[in-house]
Length: 325
Image 1 (cartoon, rainbow, N blue to C red):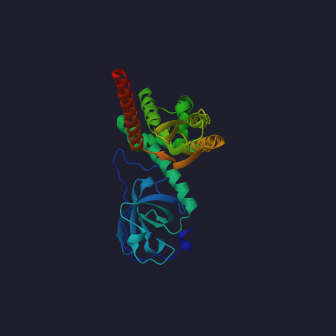
Image 2 (cartoon, rainbow, N blue to C red):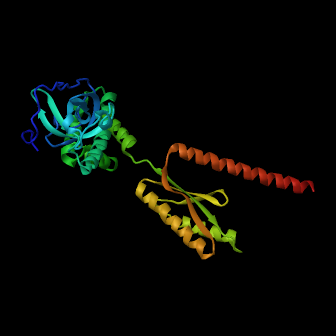
Image 3 (tube, one colour):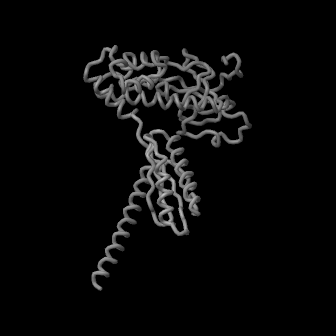
C-alpha cells in the first residue's frame, strides 16, 4: 500500500513536524530512523483534534505522527473520543512517511487482528531489549545510540530480533557477545540486566474444589482421590492440594508456562473426580484454574495460616480438658 493508493490528504490539515529527542539515553528501537510504509507500529495518543489524533511512535524514539479522522474506523464516526483516548497505546499502520517535512500518516482502521498480535509481541520484546540496553548505557555513561550501533542493531540483523539473542546469551554468553568490542565490566553489566529482565519468573495457578464422600470409607476415599490428583504432577508443574475447610480444598502449581500450568490443574481435577466417583463420592469445581497475583497468593497463605492456628487451638483445648478429667 503506497501513498498514491490512498485518499489525497488535504494541505489544510495542520501538521506537527517530526521531532527527534536527542538526550544521551534517547534512541529508537530499530536501526531505521523512520518506519516503512505498511509497517504496523505501536503509538501513544498525545492529542485529539477535529482532523484526527496526534501520536508518538514508541518504537521510533517518540517521533510524532497523525491518525487521520478518516483512518480511525471503518464505521461512521459519531464521537472520536469513543474510538481513541489520550494516553492510550494504539496499534496502527503506516500510510505515508515524508522524511523531508517530517510527516507520518497512520491508520487504525486498516490494522487486522493478526497485525495486532504480531505487533504486540514484537513491541514487548523490543521494549525489553531497550530497557536492558538503556540501563547498561546509563551505568557506563554511554550514549544509548552508540550501544545500539555497537551491539543492539547487529544482534537484530544476526538473530532476527535482539530479544532472541539475549535469550540465547543467558546460556551461551561467549558465543553471542564474544565478537563485540565490550569491556569486561560492560559485559558483566549486560548479563546482569538480561538475567534480571528476561529470565522467566514462575507464575502461580490456583483452583478450588469441593470433595465429599459419605460412604463407609469416606475420609480414606477423599485422601486417595487427592493423592491421585497430586500424582499427575510433572517436573515442570508440581501439583499441591491443601485443605481450606472441609469439604473445600485449594489446588496450586507453580509454572513458567501459563498454558501448561492451567492444563496440569485441569488434569489433576479430572483425576480427583474420577477417583472419588469410584468410591461413591462427588467433586465439584468452586473456582476454575486461573493465574493468581502476588496479592492473591499472600491472602491464600494468610488464610491457610489462620486455619492452621485455629486447628491447633482446638487440639490444645481438647488435650487440656482430658487432662483435667
